[in-house]
Image 1 (spheres, helix red, strand yellow):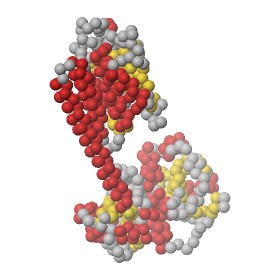
Image 2 (cartoon, helix red, strand yellow; image 1 turned 120 degrees about the horizontal axis):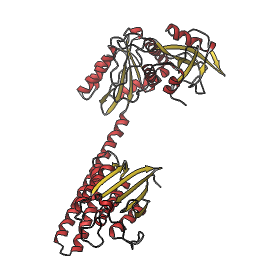
Image 3 (cartoon, one colour; image 1 turned 180 degrees about the horizontal axis):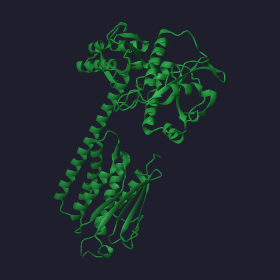
Image 4 (tube, one colour; image 1 turned 180 degrees about the vertical axis):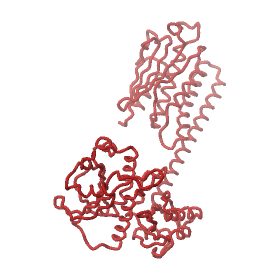
Length: 508
């Protein structure tokens, strides 16, 4: 199904600002739907020919829907949209008319004009119509809760027609939670509670307030209840801002080990401030889980930090041992082990600064490549270059892959560009500067990596499957075992040697 923007741009002449306002309506109208016990359909006129297009729909969570089928994308005209035409042309809420039937479901039609206020705050033109359609099959004598819901819904409907609802979204707020069913408190113009739903009463009881809320000054109550005076003042100021006609950000109140999220909305139908609507939600368990996750993440980062420190200690001990060894072969072996341990420590260092078990691998590759040119046993100055991006990799792949790349880069530098005068030594073809290029790209849930040099190339007798020193044996074991991938060593297209890796990114 096409999005609201796609449908509006294809079928109407609405401006980008109009469509943005419709998006705000659709992002916040679950509140109005639940308070109204009704489906809401967002209708826009189609090219002034008397037809309307439905670009969005929301069903109530508090009542049965009037439509079993989705209405988005439907274009209607004629008598079926007469109520929409009245609301659109006259700019007023339409509530007249008899119930209509959708199959076996009787429904009551209402139409609410949607205005976009001008930049200077004046009431602008009508850009769309919200159809409010109520399923009447379960109609009964309304309770006090339902009457308060419907009264508040009518106030918000008038504010929609005035262009003052929904309020602008604050930065960082991705949803309109809490919702109606979580808890609703209605205030009069003086900030006194005139109605509190049972769920709202329960939420305040968890904060330590056992009395009934009706008649309480909610701003003062928030100050009294909050464990932190600054937090209480902040929550109280949110209520007072709503009474002044503003729409403050959501606030949290902590008291007696419980946490409650509040959202305050002004009620000012026809521009007259008559009070405020406060939605509340008990989020004690949510915050408890958040704290547990934060503690877990901190513990994991600390473990990675300690593993990194331990590996660096091991590398230092190996380096010290290498200095005391008189046999050149043993010293070289120990120095190679130092580099291998240091490359693993690099991954754990990155993980110790990350909030999850994944690392941005490009920076690690760049550091390993730089280290390879500094420690390689060659007199030739070799340039390192990376093409493409490895992206973010999970820790289990990153740890093995960094060892593989460390070995391949050292092999490329040391064996591709041996010291001058060594048997078989030869520089790059055409006098080009010695260079190693690491290339990476993702394709069909696989990571394709190549390490290519423009050095002297592979020896004629080289056996890619069985030959090679310990470093290549480690590479083959890690690629085929830990990484479940494949590796191929072959002559480069422009000379030198190329190692090609294919590593699956999806779990087997």
